[in-house]
Image 1 (cartoon, rainbow, N blue to C red):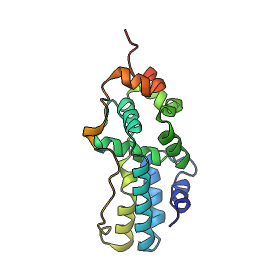
Image 2: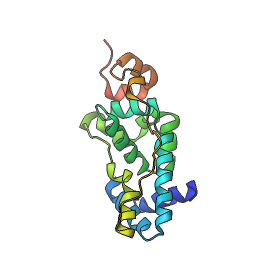
Image 3: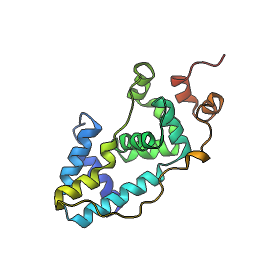
Amino acid sequence: MRTDDFWAVIDRATADRPASPAEVAERAVAELASRDPEEIVAWGRHLDKVMVASGTEDLWAAAYLINSGADEAGFDAFRGWLIAHGRKAVAAAVQKPDVLANVVVIKEAADTGAVFEAEEVLGIAARAYEEATGQSLPAEERPSHRPPVADLWDFDNEDEMRRRLPRLSALFLEPPD
């Protein structure tokens, strides 16, 4: 399966602007479950590649800021939400996480406190494989898809957050004294 094929599944699942990332996941599961099990496994490998590519320290910091905190599972779920918005959204956020300050629902979250997570997107391949075969997705060694917590800069350091993510910081942090 090529990268374009991976994203085509997401594109079809996001057609007609589904109501939520959960609906995107449902649509993707339905499509993949009709394919050969090997294709489902290959799709899951591409998801792992996207998770590795998006596992950057500054994107994690953006998730931390936007969601009022993000542990390892929270960062993964945030990236699931991002993947449900398609290839361009992921690419832009990985390249420059501060671009997320342009997203309307994220701007609104500064006032509403909304949290952006979609674990169900991360389980698409496993659910599709189970639907297609009645068995669990074969266990494979998965690549590390985020930096170790001990290696992260201090996301509670507001000065550093403002330096690295100025636009998101303007939305989510109190103005400096």
